[in-house]
Image (cartoon, rainbow, N blue to C red; front, top):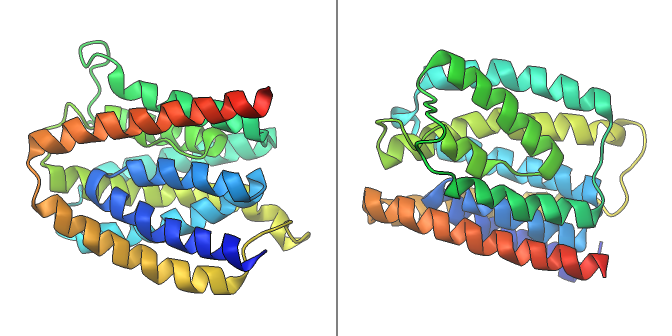
Amino acid sequence: MSLSIGAFVIAMAFVTATLSGVFGMAGGLVLMGALALVLPVSAAFVTHGLLQLVANGWRAIIHRGHVRWDIVGWFALASAVAALGVAALSFVPSKPVLYVLLGLVPALVWLPQGWLKLDAAQPRQALLSGFLVTGLNLLAGVAGPLLDIFFVRTALTRHAIVATKAATQVFSHLAKVLVYGGPLLTTPMKDFPPLWVFGLAIPLSMLGTVVGGRILDRMSDVNFKSWTRWIVTAVGVSYLIQAWMLLR
């Protein structure tokens, strides 16, 4: 890996961790697309999983007083089932397919709330979210907008939403690391970032999470939900354009 690509990965780790610290999902979406630009798909999946695992885990620790651990427990159980299912399929998307999936995922934020009366605070729906979110995460690399659907109808505050979603995403990204990182145990992955990149990117992800939390404190619940929808939509459109360019 070249020095410029390594520096790019490190910079994006900080920027996207800050975004996630504020909006809970936009950062992961941006990071996945950025990594796919410079890394093979499998390497991008594992790198994204490791960085987001740290960023989400640290965010959950920072806001641990707001985490709904009952939701996290049901999510983790279903997440394990989804990981086993996708691992059995041995599916790795091509770059054009990956960008198409990344571009379509944000459309989920525009589904009318009346269509899907979902609430992650209910055990059955927490289980459903764990299975669907982890499954989509393993196929498209991200699933923040889908996870958000299970939280828009809850009575949780913005801090509780960000904290609980971060804790659930720890298990979703852990599944991605295990499923796509398994081959690393026997065959080195081409163009996988060296340890020094992670050594710099991980603490910067933690710093970005802290910065994002400070910004979150200054936002209202209304602005928080409005900005999230428009940001992920803009990112999704850019990914569909990238997919079209790759398929020409």
